[in-house]
Length: 569
Image (tube, rainbow, N blue to C red):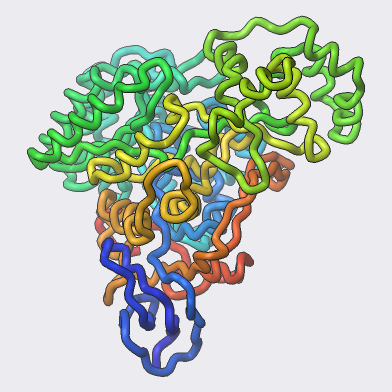
């Protein structure tokens, strides 16, 4: 008798092969039969009329702190995610000396917009070294499987102290010790090494994380430790318009290690066509069997403006900043007052940097986000189009739109990946195996980005709902976020519905699958706020053959484990 059988679903196995009807049998957390009619079971799940897919494997998250207190890594598991990779962009919490814990929190708060008070209250520190951090993660209860990478910023600060924080160049002794720490982490099961070289990442307003200005020698020497140990992904975030300067050394590292080098690939307004050159370079590398990859979003990086978020055009108004200190009922009451509205719209505005001035004035890229959110809106739906139709200023329209739904409405600003006003370039990216689905940023950007719903969006938009261009098969979209993400990180035990693979599975009512508009909730430690996004359509999500969610509700089962590279969890 099987432990569990999923009966009668449309099986999409993650390989890209056409769907087939049949059952899935599970025994001891592993798939024991795929297709046909399975025998009796201790428990049966009815999947008639539903899709049965592998669980989603999200390789770009920032749950490094949240994983120490939240077994569900909310809201990822509500979107069918069964495995995550943390420690991206050079950010993380190990190794760390006790006197640098608060500093690491400040870096994560500044770079990834995770409130420092939340991290200070939520994290229960019981580690110093990276292997000790992994052991601490292994001890925590969890619903899904987690993997982590060792972050450059923490390593540099641990070895060099203030010299590392102040961006001093490494000495030979520094580099020797840093390599030893990376080597130790990889041997303990870290899935890679991550770094950041982007000028977008700052903390304490004007400070850059350690590693941002590391020399080529430092970066390549640390990266070569992965090749020495024999596993791991080198993951990097860089300045998108400067990628052509970075690609040569990344290509050389991938060639030398024969291991994946993964960097964030985005379309930016200052260089909207640069992606064509980069994509050509990636294809050329793969023709020579060099594992260089672009990590991509499946949609624009969407900044969300609302009265509850930390980012919108009125945060530069001194009048608004005073009102923002008030409890919500008083704040919204004041914002409704005509004289207050007028003062905010016409009064003094604080000085800010060029990037923020540009963003708040790009009314052609600001859209209303409805309850059924459209992440590929037409130009005719922009605030600029409303300005032309109504003869009003952009700020007036933004203010009034944010007041909708009793002040809970959100506006959508597609920061990256929307220079053309459509997603045609993403369609091209999704057609090639030199790119990998990434950048959901689960756990991060709590106050103005909510892209953690990316796995659900990949099915709803790209395989069914898109009206402004081509779509893909469900099989292709499943493969990109199961088989492909698993293989990049060497997770050979999961990502497909095949006999002997780990029984991490989603059962999905495809017709009912939908996203709701993001919303702000206050459920983090210390009463911290974060954006979340609800969905419909997931009948069940299983980890190791145990349902962790059924009909959108957590079951209480916590079968998740820490993954260690090169080992089954």
